[in-house]
Amino acid sequence: MPNFLEQYRYLWPQTNLQTATNWRTTEDKQVYLRDLPESLEELSNDSRWPGFFPSPICLVTTTNGSQIALEKVVGASIVNRFPYVLALSFCTQELSQRHHVRSAFTDMLESSGSVAVQFLPPGEELDQAMKAIATVPEEKTHSRIADTGLTAHKALTNDAPVFDSAYMVYEAKLVKPGKDFAGQPIYSQPWVDVGSHRVYFLEINAIQLRQDIAEGRSQILWRSLPGWQPQYELQKPLSVLGDSVEDSSYKKGYTPHYVFPSAGTIAFEADSVENGMAVKYLPPLPEDQVEVDNDRARWPCFFPSSAGMITSWAEDGTPNLMPCGSTTIVSRHPLVITPCISYAKINERYAPRVSLDIIRKTGKFGCGVPFINDVVIDAIKYAGNTSLAKDPQKIVRAGLQVEPNDWAPVLPALPIHFDCQVIGEVTLGTHIMFLGEVRQIRVRADVTPENPIEWLPWANIVRLNG
Ligand SMILES: Cc1cc2nc3c(=O)[nH]c(=O)nc-3n(C[C@H](O)[C@H](O)[C@H](O)COP(=O)(O)O)c2cc1C
View 1 (cartoon, rainbow, N blue to C red):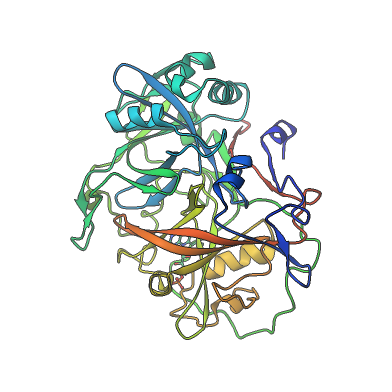
View 2: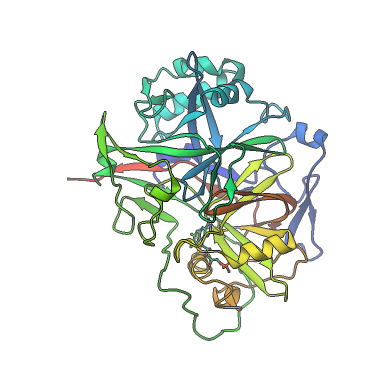
């Protein structure tokens, strides 16, 4: 990692879990456990996330016509493919100094219904924007943009301000009621209240990408998984099974060292170039957006995301694992994790998942945190391309061991695991968002402040020579 990026690193844990109140150790001393939800008192003392989940950060602007506003969002996530929908969650309850109501911002968002979600390269301008957010209080969000000292102009499809130094912008508006491909009504409401937060569903109208990136003269580098060094064996040796089972002709590739654009990614198909930005406009109706071809159905541009390793027990006791890129945390209290799982029959890429049926029936799932490690990356590739319907020994063949845990299968190779109770689901068009309230967190004992998980929530931009 280049030196200048070090200041953006997030390390977890910051305190020793062995001695922390609220955490206990298993008899074999291999795992720390914490039960959730915590009391409001515990929360007001320390409302940092009690367990780490890799989340990107973005800047979001909006306007009500007379004022403009700036906020940062941790864990913005693409949650549905057709229509193309982004979820942003904002705190609606006063939990602590860190987690407080963002109503000045959300009032403006709700009045205009539109936002510009933007990304600045790590460096001085990003620091100025983050400083304005940290130092100008929420009720004065309207003066934050001036406080950044940065220049801005209006977005193309709405009036939200866009920083001149943004390298990528997603313009989006609150979703309208519609129907999915099976004729089922969706989006009777453009948001859903989940615990301490309101989750807004925003349909993407336009994507702007700096021209030099769109043309491949510069590249976005995104490390989609955290780094971590296990201090003891990842798992016990596995008995070797027969060859992998080919699930389908379509294989979704995967690398945590993502480079966009590059040979392995889709090209950004711009409709026009405006102010040095290549722009792609998205048609408003999902029927006009849908791409049946597996490759063309890929996301049309980079958006930073990580992955949750979603586990569940099938009715006959078989463990299942589904790597899920559209996984994020939407609420702090209770802590709610939301994997978005495909239910629509569009092509091999977007097909109903077995995990969907299982989780609906049991109301329970686990979410493991993957990290940069060959065993884990191979497992993501296999389990992310092979349905349990084709390979009942999927997890073992993916190269992972399963530990018995009543709630959901635990993958002992992973540093963190969340046990989640489904408290609701939202139908989004091609994906179902499960709202999973975290009931217990398990952390391997070799995750310590001296040997932390290391995460970079921002992508970096590099200029290619020549
Ligand atoms: C990196 C990666 C991310 C993925 N993200 C998602 C996702 O967000 N939603 C989804 O429905 N499928 C996603 N998939 C595909 C599923 O993991 C895959 O279809 C899996 O085989 C489903 O298993 P199941 O049918 O046994 O539940 C992803 C796959 C990979 C490799």
